Length: 447
Image (cartoon, rainbow, N blue to C red; front, side):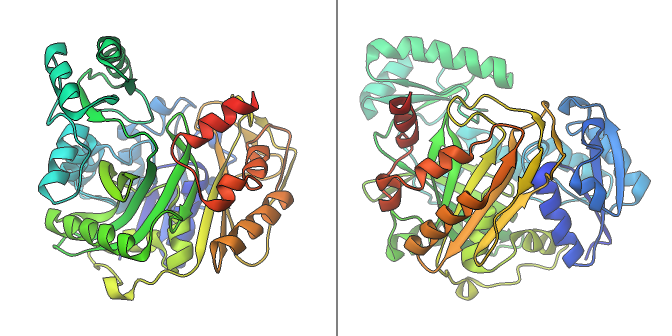
């Protein structure tokens, strides 16, 4: 097992990883920018190192400074959390060159899954169902029109190196296609430095289903069930559930088995999430995230297994602590992402939190690194905390969530709490009857 882990992140995820390390008896080092000097993870870590000014490029994305912090403190491993450098293959390679363990997959696996076209090819080879579309990047408009005609409109244009909804455009007819291609390429080039795009069938009312997988790096893989992440705005998740209200036990077992086998065949090491669109009983691969997900606590709630413990164990060479038959699903869990944003416009709302009170009681978990008097900086992601609720079934979970949202107090800034209080009382949400377009349509009606 590792002696000392450096946590290369900030906010709630840095605190989440720190807690896991303490439970395992591992010394912790955190890095921070000058803007985060008073952050909770900095206060609680065994050691802290300031690595630069507030901009991420000068601090949390500064590989040289993070490696230097490892060498100064004697850290023998790095946990990247999510975001920042968590899916940076170069970072993983550099750490390996310095004999520091990256708590995550190999740089090669990060590269494969970071390229959306190569990821799709790999998924298809591993027996994972994929969305009909182009086999690779589409550079000519004539070729794009031919592919679109073959798979049928509407189609979606996606950036090969993309994410977060950037470089994604929908074309409902051939007349739309040329403009969609031009716009997607322009956005992709500006956002990722790579204007390659590909085409897929655009599903009308799909759900977003993702499967949590783990590999031991030696040909063994397991799945921890699925999460439903269909409530999204601008392709960003805000509400996640496990298990999905749309799947039955047979579907859950089938797609989980496919994903676990694929991870084993790939020789993958650590945590990963294979994401699908799901419509009319069929799953269609969209991407794989080679890291811990923001929404991992809902899986922990229904399985009782600490996924960060598993990450650390696997990275240290200890293998997985569970076999597939050991993983049981108990009850239902929902996570709400509480952001420092206007609940209607989603405009960021940095500032000082004057009063912070979290809900409690059976089945309630809050992952947050903020406190009363904490100042939300304007430089980073707006997530200030996650409310995770667990119940014996979805009905109990929804009732418990309603109560927990009423207890949650964050004063001094605007947050998305009012939006969740509205959603928990909505009939479609109560019935589990929603898809990836539902929230944006709901918000449009409220304007």
